[in-house]
Structures are given as structure tokens and as C-alpha cells.
Length: 179
Image (cartoon, rainbow, N blue to C red; front, side, top):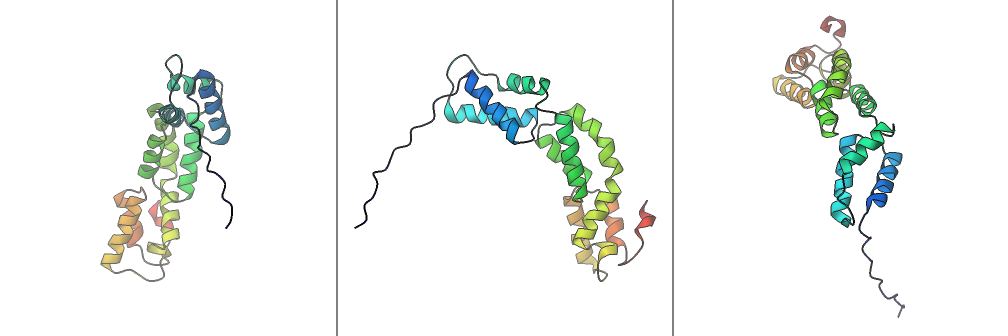
């Protein structure tokens, strides 16, 4: 019979204090591009999981301090995320939702909106190209298929009018007329 090791009971990690919370926050921003909102949520979750010892914690103030030190930049994070999503073919509504979920403030989101709007057509065409919709399809779809294509574009964050125009185009049709 093989010998088995006695099972070791895992000790729970010690409760956090101010210094441990700051180390945890620094390690998080070192490893991940993040926003103040995301970092605050992460720290609140860690406090809930491990407990707290000492004076009351203020994760939002710690996130603000790291932003002032330049470790966190919500606008740069938003620009990078928005441009990456546009390159993938996702539309303004979808990008705005992701930025809001990431904790990007209203002021930073509004500053990013013109850039997202400028890439609107390119993003929609990229989406259509990837999904073989409209001018990128091999054959013209029937009505139910075209409706599914329009719905996919809308779920991708594109507006209905542009989605319908692209999905209604014949295979191989020139996309320059959309501008």
C-alpha cells in the first residue's frame, strides 16, 4: 500500500491592514492595466475575503493616491480598450458599456466619444468582414438570414441604420458609398 501524507490544514491568510492593502494594490497595478474603479472593487473584495485589522480602510482613497502617482490612468486605459475593441469591429454602444463597466468616469468617457464616433464605419465594416455580412458575403442572404446578420451587428454595438445598410448590400458591392 502506498503511503499517504497526512493532510495539512491550510491556515487562512491573516487579515489585511493598511500596509498589506497598499502592497496588494501595488502588486495589482504592476500586473494589470486597470482603472480606479476596478482597483477599488478588487480591494473591497480582498478586504471582504480576508477581513480587516486596524483603522477603517478606504480603498477608493488608495486607488486615488495611485492615480495621482501615475500608476493608474483611466483615460489611457479607456483609449487603449476602445481602440482595441474598434479594431475587433465592435461598435460605440458595446465599447461604451465596457468602459462604464471598467469604472471609467463620465468625463473620461465623453472625451473618448469623438474618437469612437470617427471609427464607427471602419468598425462596422470590420465586423461585417469578419462575419461575412453584406458586401463580404459569398451569396446574398435570404430575409431571415439578413435579419440575423442585422441582429448580430446590433449586439456588436452598431446602430440599426448602419447595420441594415451594410447587411442589405449585395456581395462584392463597393463599400465607399456608405460614407
